Amino acid sequence: MLVFLALFSVAAAAPQYYPYAGYPVYSVYPVYQPYPVYSVPQEPASTRGFLTFAGFQTARADLVQDTASGRTLTGNVEFKQNPFTGSSMDYKVYLNGNSLAGNKYQLGIADSCTGTVTNIGSQITAPAFLINGFYANGRTSAFNIDGADGKTSVKTKFMTVKDNAGTLVGCTAAVA
Image 1: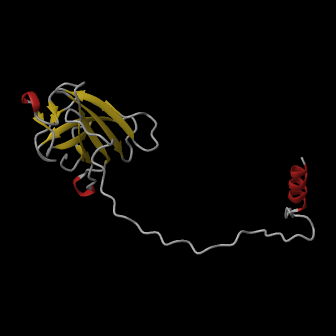
Image 2 (image 1 turned 90 degrees about the horizontal axis):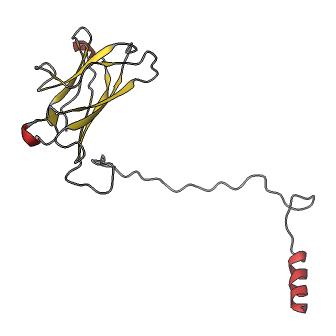
């Protein structure tokens, strides 16, 4: 018991350095020289997960803006094919540009931006109120990523976006 009394008296006698008068108070922590930060070049991620399976395939491309040829839209497209879709594929498109609200657009796949277009799905209508563009998604059975079951592969093709008048307003780079 006397050991605990001695321990308590030693602990109580130790200065606590609270901000009372007479004790040194440091209002700011000292600033140390930061360690240099070195950037490591990052490779773009080809998948979203740690594991890849042969049945789960993804292809994507970005819309290329070219105002000289009337292609004013920006955005991207991502195609996904997996065992749950069979030989069909799902697509997800993000479109952004000026005065999109309330307009109708037709998505299609072509060999080039000026080539013959095969429509995928029906026309899509942009929401009436937009802040930063909109997403559209769907499924097509005319194309797939790997060309299985005699369908056309979207790899090395271009996705086109036409407005309601049939004018080309957006085109991606080659899908990879």
